[in-house]
Image (cartoon, rainbow over the protein chains, first blue to last red):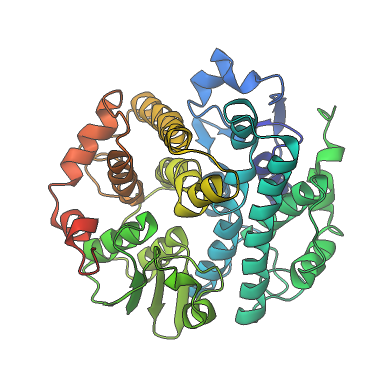
Length: 212
Length: 212
């Protein structure tokens, strides 16, 4: 397998965790987002969406982190990343998409650049935008986890799932942007538990060879 | 089943299509987004994310359209909405998430309101923002569909899948915002084919009882 990744990309971070959890060997190819290497023709030919991560597994060129992780879970089912019933999977996917659809797309490098370059938004207002979506998303997720009562050491009991894989990179990002996180004791307790696990530690931005 | 929906919500539109395709009977509860009924305490108690759609199926309260549709496909597998191999499902999910993660979150009512109310962005710049994410997303999806060569009458051959369920509401929204769409012949050809199907026609905003 060949993983196209950037140390600070949240979606790449998700996939690095999933590959580590499943113990899947892979070669890494580093694509710098600040250097805009994702817009190079070679990478664009591989992934027309020009987004990270991208995973090549045999003849399959896989794109979109959430789609890739579902693929890995279906193809390499040992150490499952999903619960064993449709109802529980719906909960895990709901938590996951509450991050992957409702927080990260708004706080990605693309929209932040657009706010700055096309709209002339200053740094304080960009920061407020960033914090707004983290706050809105995390308030909802904290309430959801408390309401459902399905969390334990992790988002779903004591099983590490896709929800945890989405949570950790989002918390890293929120910390990097100095977002207040004291109002989410459930989420942050789970985050602390997860960051004791080697697959998560090894996947974090600071531990990547392309860290600058 | 009880569906909480709003006629113009793209995510509700996705779920209406899925329910129609599978022929699943349901009662509709209308939640007006302009009247901010999604922030009422009764609805918030049901769905702490305060987002549409929400589906109640027996004891299960299901949230997040993509998670709900995967649940429906697992629970009611007749008339599948996904292909039959992990590799093909990865393609369908990638197209789906290219819309559900990379276009709609940025053009939802929440961010558009924030740009207007918190950032004082004028109507022309809001329109440019809207068009930018549609254009960026659709260029990538058009290229992806052409590159992969897996599309036919629909995004995946002649089988209606989750990708089509995501595509149609996004095109409706783009048309409502007068986005140019002539550069996406593959996507728009598929859209036309889909809009000949009764489950899609019946689910469209104009055909909902809560249309205002």
